[in-house]
Length: 476
Image (cartoon, rainbow, N blue to C red; front, side, top):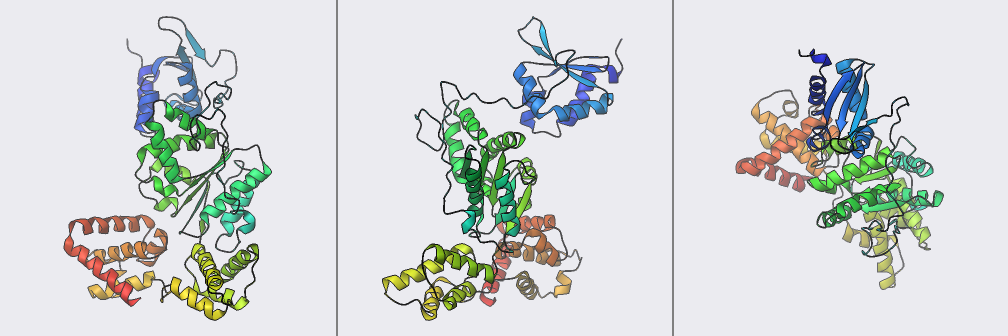
């Protein structure tokens, strides 16, 4: 006689699997859940059989909350889970948790440090007997050299807090994003330097996404080296990964970093990530990674205002033991508005010109030097400029283009405006959508992809976009 579905262990487990399958990656489901055998359901205790104690520990560490929730949904809030771990085929099983004792949640298994075979360090030449990890930090990128302003106050404050208690704040991970040359690398490394000063025993490592990718490719081409690669990164206390957007489209690298991220985060270690865009705008990265990037704090670095640019120049001048007329400093700060890297580059070029040509550093020399570095027109194209140009090209009124009309020509005009706004301005997707019809960031992203696909398949449509972009650059 068959048991009712709620008392049939196989049926209960099938119902649980139907939920779990939709939540976790398919590879994880096949590896950890498909081999599980439901044994019995007795006295509100549900018993499953797993192949080894390692499998039991891994499931307890990574999936126990998910399994518990699905079981409670099927059998009620008082259900208990029991594991039967097969030691040797046809012999007795080991039951977890031990009967009569309170259940304990397993901690991550520490990797042995006294092994005869040391873990290879991907940052050094193979063959060295000891694992000595260079943090790869530039001492020039300290907090003392990072000028605070409205453009970076949130990110800098979070960084200072992390340096005092790495892994123990709500800012984990800290995701720093912004345009090129705005100080992302400087700030990320400043946190690492401050951590090493306060906690010399902690292992801090800075690595670029490109270098991580190269190390991963090297690891997968050598038998058994991938595990060493993962174990190496799982030993880090503060991991700083620069330019995470470079992982786009690299599925294997993303998968490796996903496991490293999970291990470090669950172990209370600190992660600091930098990118040129916020998580919501990153393309080509798995959703499970992007969701983890949002767990902590996302902080934007913006272009500094003129007062902050002056302070940056004065700090650079002071640390180089130079003297410069205030008028020269103000001129450079007013003239260079793109990013900090170009701002400091203009100062270095000015000093080189003065030294090589044996000239005094005057406002006139500053003007002559910066004019060679900066485009004659400093004005950046705005979303408003793009809307005007698109409307003029298609003979539409701004009100008509921004209306809720679903006419094909109006929809395409809006989409082209969104596409060009993303390519030609520094505005976020949310900002672009707000200014073009009050749309959300998802609509802007859809428009961008639609225009890009049409340009690949429709030469006439592509010509429209190319001509509008040319007009923008010539007019504005």
